[in-house]
Image 1 (cartoon, rainbow, N blue to C red):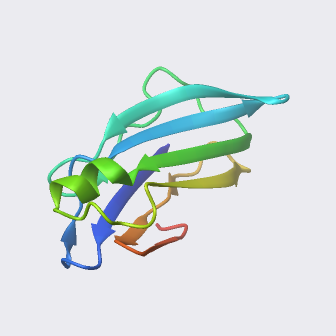
Image 2 (image 1 turned 180 degrees about the vertical axis):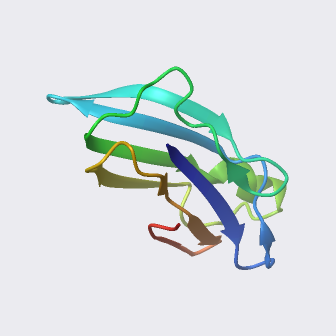
Length: 111
């Protein structure tokens, strides 16, 4: 299972409505295996519907521009954030949270 959530550090709240794409690296190409948008609680818990996770390299891409515009932050520095990570054991839960502000972001492996 691969899940994520986003917290807005500038507001101190979850970040709803952020589009997220999950891709899997096959040879030299990225293949989309899941997508969605964060809910009111900033969480997206079903990124791999219809995809059986396997060991390998994945990429999460967060479209932050949509969220920042809704917050009145047209001058936010990062329009998107992408993170590449490795799934070693597909039976484990991989939770990848993102902390955002208009001028920075941090990502980590959660639990």
